Length: 226
Image (cartoon, rainbow, N blue to C red; front, side, top):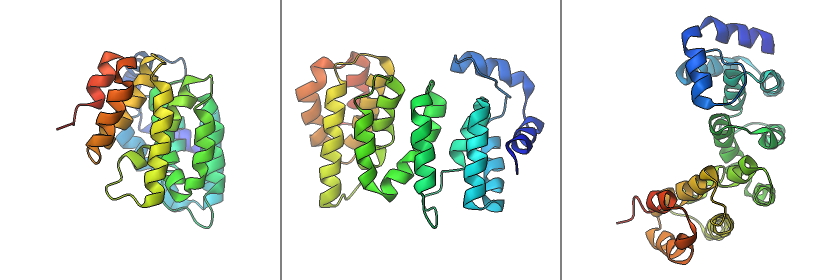
């Protein structure tokens, strides 16, 4: 399957009447077809089942290059599976090449969900994510927290994962002085999810750093605290 074939398939299931509202909602100038996430999921599942890993990577790259909103979402979904055999290195390298190109939350989130699985598969890749925390590009910095959410959600972390969790919380602590809405939201998201499993850690973070956070972020971070 070529990227052109995939775009043609997405166009067939698109509702053109939705394209303009989608563009207004996402506020980023790029082509929109008007395809729902549910329909993209259905299409991508079929593609994943029919393609080899190399073919999936080639298709994902081609779809990303089109800059069409739904194509970029589909590209991320092509790399979504937890286990990629024989090696997921190509998928990880593709994801990291996309990160500096993030310009909107929706596409960034879809790619970050795929990135979460690659980080869990090889936690040594946290070194790369740590480098993102020092970027001048806010979407790259945000990706470091969104891609590491699995550590916020671990119910019974092993000792190494506890160290990784504390490492990521250290990154979040450096973000609190940046009052950009999306950066603050990423900190709040991480803390909110983590509070379900370690409320004391989140209370401690808020006691130390909460005064530097925006009010909405403090409220969101504490939403599930008992």
